[in-house]
Image 1 (cartoon, rainbow, N blue to C red):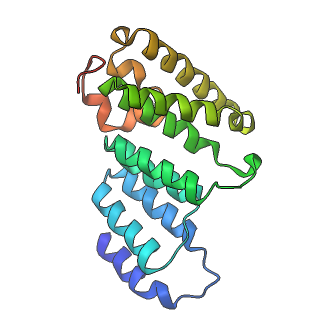
Image 2 (cartoon, rainbow, N blue to C red):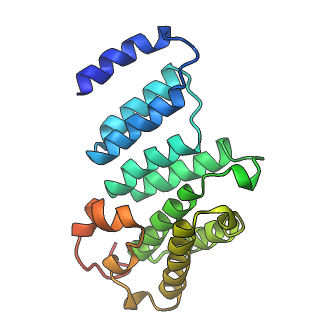
Length: 192
């Protein structure tokens, strides 16, 4: 499969400019997420962004971050979300924003803080939640429900981190059911 994709990518620079390469990039990131192939995702991202000069949108960033979340590379995912906020969302109206990435970003930050119990990670989590709360009014009902659960767990984590094990903080569906983290056991808060 990788060889087939690479062959298509060889022809991509000469393909009609009408082709929406961001959709193609998102699809490839989602395929990499399904197989938990973060190295492949990194190589494809580099090729699209640096060689083909594709300007990723929030859907692309969300799909790329999802690869890293499912593989347990949460710091990488959080960095990608930060980059997205700077390069894609800067000055964009809240109604145009992909609220799914906010859920995924906070989920990643909750696990990072649970692992480290670092004040720096706690402050980052609070900042992202505060910044995202107004945007979540535009989210789907399911995303709003997940958002509420993430907020409750974030508060519990700050007040009594010892009460929560790793499975308790894996709230978003694909993180709880598809990520490598589901097999990491009942790790206590601050174990890293």
